[in-house]
Image (cartoon, rainbow, N blue to C red; front, side):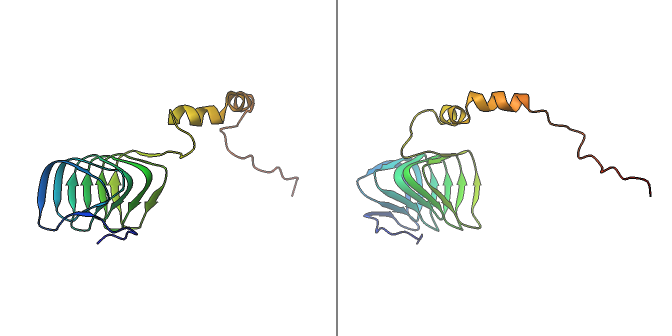
Length: 151
């Protein structure tokens, strides 16, 4: 089973196949195959043998198996060394172990700031920085060789 600190109250076991809508009050462990809609306010764990095709919305998400779909976690995402994700990840905290394979866009959010992430970052950069950078002249020719006096 994937490394977690919580005991799931709902399990789709290895060898099981579930297709449809699954809304759970509590944590979920998927060791079998799942395709459809899934949502929990707690933790969702895709175990080592889990194969999931859905968008995940949960407080915490741990992936040790395979996920095709996006992740929206309000607290944390853990990608375990055997995890494979094809999809976008949005979370305030992302932990990635060596060996993980993923393809998609990652957005690290903030627990304190909400809204348009792009705007928050560009506002933080500030117009005065753009103005200062436009005044600085940078040579593209590379460093000058030091001048030597006659030998």
